[in-house]
Image (cartoon, rainbow, N blue to C red; front, side):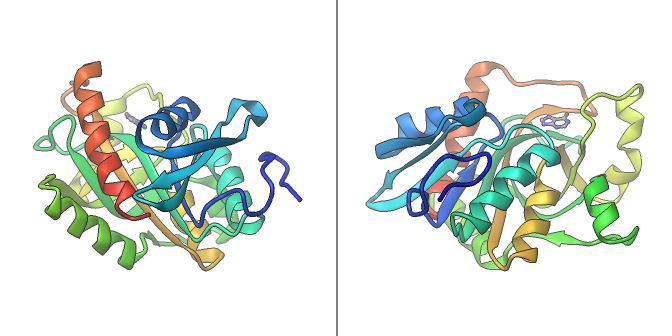
Length: 234
Ligand code: HPA
């Protein structure tokens, strides 16, 4: 049996799945960090791989951008392939001035503008949170690896572009949101709905307030820091 958007067989995907938005990132992770990696999905070029890290089976699956796309893969990974630990590895735009490019954020919770959540919760606002065990493990792994992390809340949006992007985030900045990205709120919500664990580890690719953006070299370094933490959770 397979699912609609993933052609793997049940058993081909590990219980721990890392989730980059970009399917080519999934390929890069498989080629760079995993041993004996096998590609289990090419449907829509949304690549997924299973391999081994320090002897532990781990998968890495692209989700695409935005909560609509991510929800499809997350749903199928949990409900068809029995994924138990889902860990987003992505980028975000910081909205606090003091957060530097390339730093790593551990998302404790995610606010957001998902209409899917709005409909599902009938206009009420669900507080989507990370799994505490995974969060604690990631925090300890980062400490062991000597990687500085910010811990706090993020905002997941379905609209990347806006007429007045800096003013758009003022209220959220005031309420302590560290960064803006496009998938975590849905990941945390679906993980709780289906009784599995989720975490989101993000590197800061740009600062929405100051307008700074990372060079490709800086992105690579911070990406590796984030991956080292994520892979320790396998
Ligand atoms: N907005 C939304 N998602 C993002 C951004 C951003 O500025 N940067 C990285 N992911």
